[in-house]
Amino acid sequence: MNTSDMPTRVQNRSNAPANDQADLEANVARVVTFFESLTPASVADVGSIYDAQARFKDPFNAVQGVDAIAHIFEHMFVALSAPRFVVTGQVLQGNQCFLTWEFRFSFKTFKPGSAQVILGASQLVFSEQGLITLHRDYWDAAEELYEKLPFLGSLMRWLKKRANA
Image 1 (cartoon, one colour):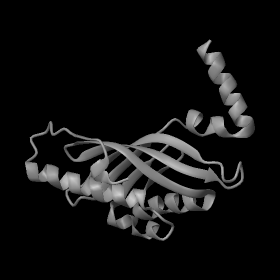
Image 2 (tube, one colour):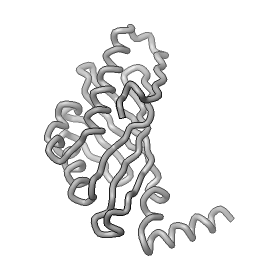
Image 3 (cartoon, rainbow, N blue to C red):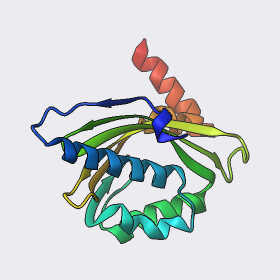
Image 4 (cartoon, rainbow, N blue to C red):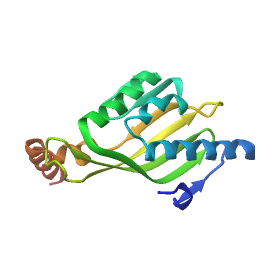
């Protein structure tokens, strides 16, 4: 997906100069391109978008530093078939952005070749140098992942049904 085709809403509620906003937009476009074209080989380039002491948190990980972040992406390519991100929206404000995305993949062992999609969002905070200092992913592991697994999925759907009754 070309980032120029993406719905974008830019809000500049801070009193940041217009050139700071243009810098943020350029940084976000660079990051979106990086994530949408991520490959096992390009994982080595995470230092080009993350600050050396960046923090990353998602439902399964909480790490700090470029090497630890790279390890998460390396593991993604080992554990899953054809993982890729598609950014579907973005909101920019001050020195941060919020991206919505689809994570597309197949499990290697469970229903190999069966396309899976996880919907989520990321909060990214940028340094003055344009590098990510905080990357926080938000997605519902129960609905987006656990419900798709054989035994655990049945249990999660049953629990969800009981909670909604």
